[in-house]
Amino acid sequence: MLEISMNHHHSLVLDDGAEIRWSLLGQNRASGTATTTPVVLIHGITETAEAWKPVADRLGSTRQVLTLDMRGHGQSSRVPPYDLGTMAADVINVITSAGIEPPHIVGHSLGGAVASVVGATGIGRSVVCVDQSLQLAMFSAMLNEVESALRDPASFGQVVAMLFDQLMGDRLPSKERARLAALREPDQDVVLGVWSVLFEASPEEITTAVDDSIAGYVSNPTPYLALFGAEPGGDYHPWLQHRIPSAQVEVWDGHDHYPHLLDPDRFVARLERFWETDS
Image (cartoon, rainbow, N blue to C red; front, top):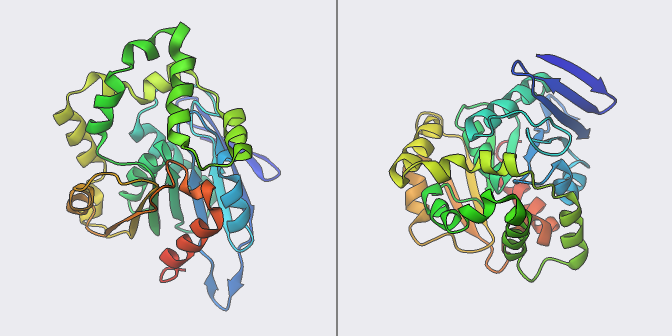
């Protein structure tokens, strides 16, 4: 692996040739012998590190904040594969390259699934998964309804735009909706690559793959918070706790898919409360 630094922007070239762009911003304030734990923020599918800006700006006043463009997104290169295991390994390589202490890991949407896999390795102090159910077999059933349209280059962009318009809900301010829309770069090969297992595997195979990817939490009780903007389903809490014994599930009803951007002050305050025993 090769590390290239451009002021606070960095580029990590991995062994498979993928180049991952990442940044380390904010403060790392020491108090006596204690150091404020850094934070890693992982964005959602078709987005970039910039999607986290309202949250990163707030966290950066007291902590180091590491953001990255996942492979296939933003300024990182488009080098397959785009599965959760590969993307989680990319995040771990970036954390290692940055030389920071074990961080809090926060991910949204696809980034929440990636954060969950990263956290299972024990590299982080805690994990926060924002509006991403790990019951991916249920998500695959929804995607199967639009699979043919997603595979058609003529309709791919329209379908992705429709999906995200629904996810944003009605409460996200128009300025923030426009900012996210400007950041979004839906690449068909990347999106289909991320979702390939959901199209190709059976529900049982998908559940087994998820279970295998997060099995480390059973022996490694990393604090874990699943924060949703809408109810994920009545059985999600026991389902998740069976796999991640330390998991908490919290719902901010009516906050849709972007609770962290709808109310970033409340979100950052919630993070700090969740982290206060660790920092």
